[in-house]
Length: 637
Image (cartoon, rainbow, N blue to C red; front, side, top):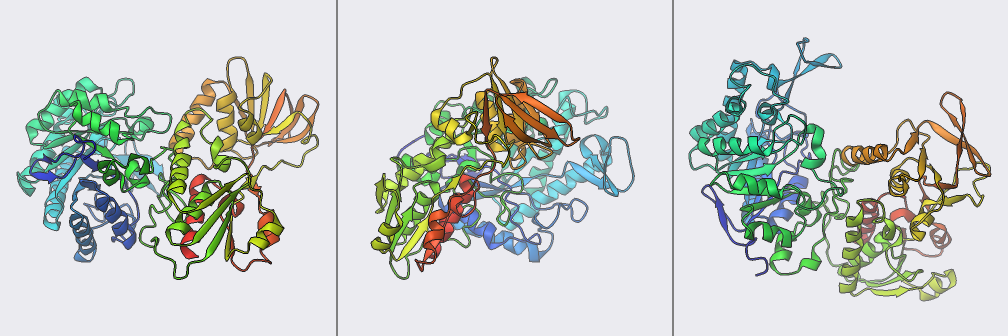
């Protein structure tokens, strides 16, 4: 077996785990009316079947209705809600995996009247419990959480993970910068840890000494005056003394979320050293977490004694079979997470919810299955970008006779350029995996093959998928066709741009990432955006990181401003206040949303009975949307 350390069995408390891979909590928010749905069940069935030894599941509402977050949150206070959770646990157990329930309580409470420190929200007020709750209220919450652990054991969970990180209630109590209390729960470190240690003891007393309790502990907040590793090593000792069975060495708080949920800006394994430091302080198992993106790294962590287990979430969303593939030595077959935080964070994708850029099946396992086609047909795929490659691979797996034509001499389309901007190197993994999958398939690939209408008709396939991508678009302003103006794609293709004064039209992902790439001490870069804010489609964590870098590089961003004309080396603008502005420009780069390159599709649609457009040729979007639209079509034909 490959990676012997990673795939050796071990225990957390009395819970036997077949390997060292834990699926960290991934809050799917897939519940409907607070009940488990087939979408939830099939999502976790895939991860359990794929080989994760332990899966951490989200905490159902422990205090209904007072602490109820809404219909996306599971409940288990009545049998009609509990039944679905029991069935989910049975599914996970049948795949030889274990499941812990995360034990958590909301960090805020809605109240009707203003109190000190409360924030106004519509007709109510929101108060932070860490500082506002009385000692009696703290005792009440402890009893509620301990009761939740009893319910968890009764229902069939294999243990609980207490959430003491992520800036939530317990993490705030632990923090010297966030905890403002002057009573028994504030001040010295023993007091700040008292709620947590009391909770551990109460869970053990209520649910049983043999019921495993794992602590997801904030080990460094990475903020001035915040909790650091020295504090956390002391807390880890207190946690062990209280009876905990394992510690997950997490980090960050709400203001340093980019550390808790590392983006592509982060190096791999940024928190491994924290786990190693905690491991020196305790004798119970320690779990490393945070962008552990390869089985090699995971195996080294265990083998070098830096941690006893590794936890990963997005890596298993990207490829549920990561553990099985790694164990079998099929490392190249792993569809790796690129840590883009595009489709898996916040509300995810409209109509689907939280899913995945690189794995189009994520969140759709309940309705998408690769099954043999009822009638095998010949299929021509035109275009070798991500959508075209994905459609060809899936159709080939279903038994269709597939041929792919790509007009250039290489596969990848615009995705070839996605890894050029700063910190985007991991995006190249998407193309590596698609090319690898295509090479393993029975699809015939013809490069340098421009699709000609006459040739296509003569080829006479039963079906055609058009995956010709998108084309750049320019705003209709005077001077836009001058030699001063170029498109972002052309800049990336050439890998260079000349001039000291650069004006970028468009403050979306491409425009701002281009500014990040080109800006420097000797170059002035200005982004012009017509909307009130830049990066409106980018999720919060990567957006904040990118804007921070642009600020550091002194990139000017003019919002609610549009170009009126371009004359010689001057770009004329008008802003929302109808003020006329002008910018000197050595080069103007257009980076506005593209339009479908669908001319071939339009020419063929009346001549071919079964023809489909996928990816940007249907509707320009990100790589995730291209892969999903291609998969959708390939599963239906």
